[in-house]
Image 1 (cartoon, rainbow, N blue to C red):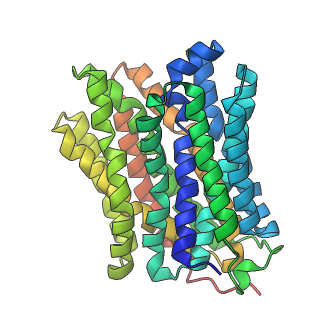
Image 2 (cartoon, helix red, strand yellow):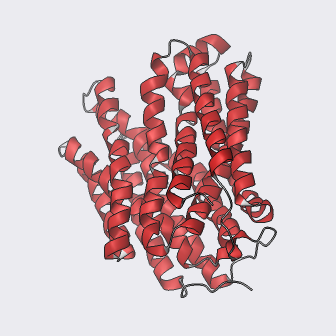
Length: 386
């Protein structure tokens, strides 16, 4: 069996490929529009198509993991990401590009669902927040690579080829390195018991925390540029400034996860981080200095990410992890489809470029309520299902 940290490295690589592939078309948007004769709406459709299947694939994906094993589904997921990426490189028309994005996006959902389950299987509870924190940084790291590297490739097709190449590298690494965990109930293929009522409700509550955090952050990233430009900041400066928040997550998530694993009190740390996120967003709206507020938002987002992703382990028996993470991410993708647009509606209804940031702050605030729900609902550590 491969060392847990080596497997974690492969999973981080796979999530980095996912983080790079999702925004890849947006990073070279003008070139894609000119080559395929696309409108802005068509480009937006291609970008959004990547996550469109998330709500419909996450829960069946959890069942598939339990039925066929995490290694097979991991390889399938990365393989679909690579296949969609290769198809996109040679796509002659919009329809082919759309199919390619749906294919790679569906594969990414399988990777997103199976990766935390595999981490839970390999790391003991005290090490889990740090391991989850390390797993999470792959996505913002991939975002940064896409925005920094792809525009300088000279053409959008080589840029997409670079992304497909990273997916291929992750696939080869997973095929040679990842092996199933030897022994234990979590590895019994074909058994996918549904969580009992109380653990299920607790799981839904902590999934709500994760979804609200990510929806708030997505609303912030989507609408903060317009807010800063309205304050007189050049667009390029606004984009560079806003990149500070996601980049800060990269070092903070694993470091804070390690610290939480040693000092304990993850729920208090998550609650405090959510409250400080609200404060950071309100500080931005109040036109306080932007750099400290953005640093704080990125830091506390990183601090709470690992502990939140470790909390499902408290309510899921080993055999329930696969299906449980499918449920977890079904809530995530469903929320990500519905909630961020509310920020845009708020701007249209009020005519204020600050309104989306208030909505983002509100989503973080509701995350505190979901966390309280988890505290109330969670049972003791689940026993193995016989």
